[in-house]
Length: 173
Image (cartoon, rainbow, N blue to C red; front, side, top):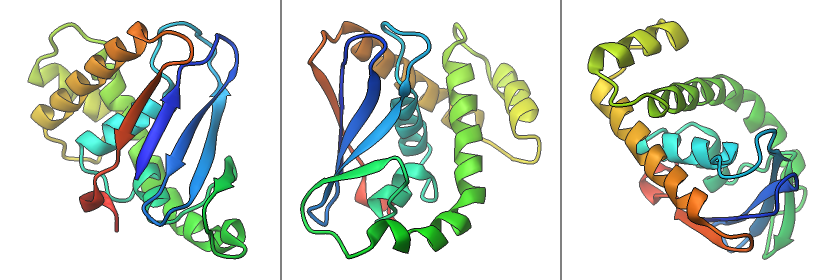
């Protein structure tokens, strides 16, 4: 799956073009960023965290596997009849893992905001955000570094330019 994020003028509703392996293309709408400018959009932060941590039951793996969210609009390509309605049951089953993926992405984002985070700082943040989880500080730190790199790439984009990401097939259930 390929996901393309265009850099739009400030205060416009963000979106990504999602081209799945089955030939269908959707526009995935985000929100209007409350902090316009060079800040990395929410959906990119999630994609980076989920990809770097190898999350197979998060939002992006679900979309790659055929999940159609309410904020997705069909653009082109074949799609099963009633695709959005058919996703209703999987979305219910998906809610718990998606929430965990959200919390992990928030953790990675918090670590990325630190200047040279230590393993103990990462453990402290992890305990505060996901107290029941046993997380590898090195993996969280590596994901945070990847997020910092992508934030720098995004900050250099001009209006109309894009960032593209390929979602690894190994992360699709």
